[in-house]
Image (cartoon, rainbow, N blue to C red):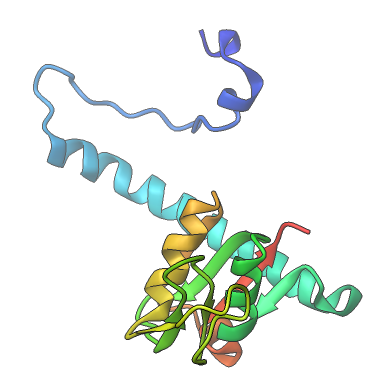
Length: 159
């Protein structure tokens, strides 16, 4: 049956099988059975994304990576973010244009349309929403100090 699935779907399947009796299993049982597998997969994805970020920052002047709040917000405005990484407890004030959605760390007028910028108590939350709306992968980091020197937020760029 597995071989009948499209190749891209087969690539998403996990090799480990779960032994659960469908008739007696509850949501808590499914969560418990999958928790370790999903945690391992998340950790592997974060490791891969951090490695890719380091590689892109080291290559060609770092043109396919953004590090720090201003650089990440600029990349989001250009719709270039493929993967957004940020410390889960990171909060920074900023500004956002209510007309076009441009975001920055500070300013009075939108550089794109000249509109009045509205202050935001947590621009990181807005950045996460923007990344999701652009179909970027969003990886909140817990207990991972790798991007702390980068201001707690970074991105791997599409182009």
